Length: 225
Ligand code: ADP
Ligand code: ADP
Image (cartoon, helix red, strand yellow):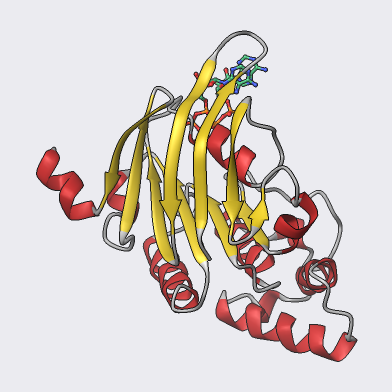
């Protein structure tokens, strides 16, 4: 994927300027979006996942335009918000089966294969019959990861990727993402903790107070600091 963000700004109705004229190019692989709380990361993510309109500017995903092709963009998008929660009474496997059907996998057998594959990948196969909302915090986060990735999205956006995961789970998640990032996929990891992503991202951007303060490699950022 090639994501181009052009002159994107967001001013909230109360006058708060959350993003000021952001320009970014994001290619395949893992991209880090860094910044302290209030920098504008969530605002930028909400715009990219088509949940919120920018005030001015646009973005493109290969040939898809943010304003014109919402439906197409949503169909290739996997978004894991920080506070992903389960309100349903579905079992763990049923939850993933539902996610797979939303992602357009019509064949029941194909869904079963996918669901089993992802239950294994995130280490939830043994608890597949348990109600999703009765899983532990780390397990819920892993289920969130599986439901985000089960439809083979081409654009993956994860907010605070390490939240709720213990060190072992973090390594597992990182390995899953690095495997996926070998394909024609763009992964955006958003965080306020530099150490979370600097070792896995080939490129990153630093937002500060709605401004793009830096873009480049992690090495260049460390040199600058
Ligand atoms: P981050 O995700 O980096 O913490 P946000 O995008 O959430 O940053 O917020 C950027 C700025 O915009 C902050 O000052 C925040 O208070 C403000 N903000 C976020 N959402 C709204 C909103 N709906 N209305 C007004 N201001 C908002
Ligand atoms: P996060 O940065 O964790 O994603 P939010 O984007 O929900 O959190 O909110 C970030 C900040 O923006 C909060 O501190 C909140 O006070 C402020 N904010 C959110 N919504 C509004 C709003 N409608 N009006 C004013 N400020 C808001």
